Structure formats: C-alpha cells, structure tokens
Amino acid sequence: MEENSAVQYKNISIRTELKPGDLGYVIYRHGKLYAQENAYGIAFEAYVAEGLAEFYRSYTAEKDRVWICEDGDSMIGFLLLMHRSETVAQFRYFYLEPEYRGIGLGNRLVQLFMDFLKEKGYRQAYLWTTNEQIAAAALYVRYGFKLTEEKESSAFEKLLIEERYDFHFNE
Image (cartoon, rainbow, N blue to C red; front, side, top):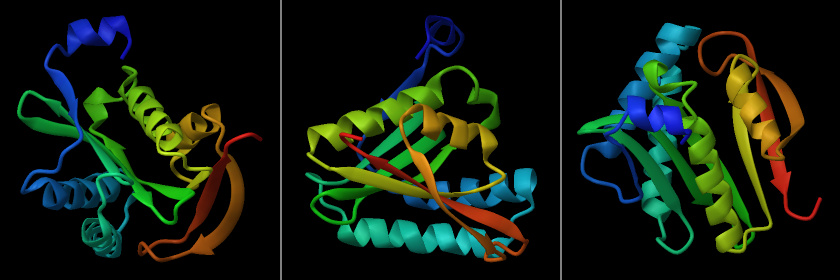
C-alpha cells in the first residue's frame, strides 16, 4: 500500500487462509454492494454463491489463493485466484468496501494476484466483469489484461455488457 494509506489505516492486514464465515460474508457483501452501486438483483448474489461453492469444492492450496483484507476484525476486501487448468487461472470476486477505495489497496491485491500467478507457473489468467466497473477495468489494463470479449447480458436482472479480460505472460 502507499505510505499515506498505512498511516490512515494502520490495522489493515491481508490473509490468505479461509476461515468459517468468510465465503458467506463475501457473498453477502457482493450482494449488498452491487445492489446499492449498480442495481444488480438477487441473481448476482446467487451467481457469486455458486462460484464460491465451486471454488471451495475444487480448492487446492498449491494452485488456488484467496486474499482477504481486514481492518482489525472487519473484512474490507477480497480477491481470489481459481485454477482452471495447469496453466490457466481465473481472477474472481474482487471487491473493496467503498471507504477503502483509492488508497492503493486494490493495486496491492492485484499485484499479489500477479505475483502468485507467476510463482505458480500459470501462463495466462482471465476475468469477467461488466462495463459498469470502469475503475476496476482500468486497474486490470494497467496490469496487462486486455479486453477480449463483450456480450450483452441480463443475467444480473438488468441489461449490461459483460466483458472478458485476458492476461498472457510473454506478450
């Protein structure tokens, strides 16, 4: 994190081990935040729940990773890397509580993701987002992700554009 954020938020830590309640809380916060900020419906929350259940069922410590940001005892951010093959990983469920945005924490999480990706020998990664996540998309692009696909969708109970971003080493 940037130096000034360390002063402002002295108690922020990032852990990489899941604890009971973490997955449910990530589902809950995604549901609440995306409803408030983007008017997504309950279908989005169900989508997150299904994806996190899939992650947990296929979790392998050598291939998968979570980064859970906490300020004291409160979860304030989350990101996970999910293996899809020996060489491909998926970037999923990135979120930060609104009051913790803009302090360098999102940048730190993406850097940790990229470091783990390289350390574990993945050749590529991808993520799905929507056209409404402009700040997040800009962050992905800064790290070398490229927009590769766009499709109209109403999966989250509103019309939007889903976007796929891909990252490849050695490009």
